[in-house]
Image 1 (cartoon, rainbow, N blue to C red):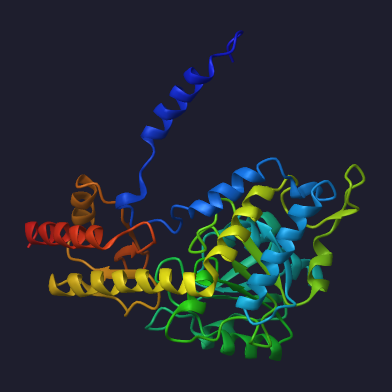
Image 2: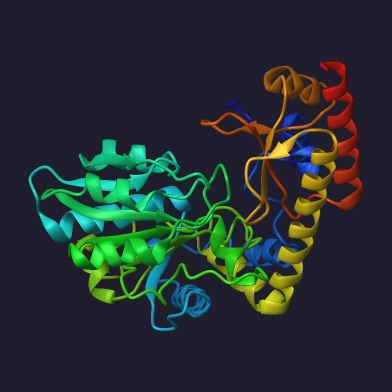
Length: 377
């Protein structure tokens, strides 16, 4: 720190210089976040000083959080669902399994997750001292129920299903997982961090939420396809009793207890999430998802014509393509300014078609992909 401060314009120039080094979303097909909706940005700035870690000081912001949870609960078939706005899917998944562990009290607890589960569950294992057991996937990259069942034993405390897997955008058979969970008296957590703001607005209907009686908790991130500002994740429970194992006394605050993992929590992100949900409504989100799905189908069609076949027909706005000379082609695409990613097993080109992309960008990508493929044929 300098002894004497800089002028505002000098500081802003430094910030501009740093921002110029960041990647614009224009050619990013690897990210599950996107540009937030303008109204979310305005709301965020309006509540920039609100701290929900001590919500007794910010009762209006707390009311907004309760309204966001109610809106999300209605989206997921239970308007009476409870929960709170987290920093994102990682915190939500940690907290869900923390509850499962604290409710069960087994000496060597384990949790069965799909092998497609997000890496946040590996963080959870390390933090909570819980063993993570990974079930194999079927030919469509959904969790194999028989594999899940073979991994359950007397120390299993929870099952996890994914609704919109990070790599394939696939939806696990949540009803079958729920049957297993109920028959073994287990906690069932559904990670819909990405799919939560996609699946309800797809033309094809899927059963993945609290409409399934065995589902205990859900993760869903407004800062992904919900187009809220970062950080805005969501953790929802069917029953408020689930939140009690998270509570800790807070003698120095205006509130008696705190249940969040983070102490200080951004009320601004809550306001951003509320604003965009109220502004878009179901019709607005449906239009966004329809547009993203249209671009996804176009990219798959174009790739097919180039000989890059999809591993599965896209369930949501994620395409995985079997591309020849994958590493070389990704390097060539990167040289052209494109940011892409790969799946782990089997290895394939992974493309996420987010709202920041446009039809012209998709056509340009298909053209550049074609050039790269032809170069290595």
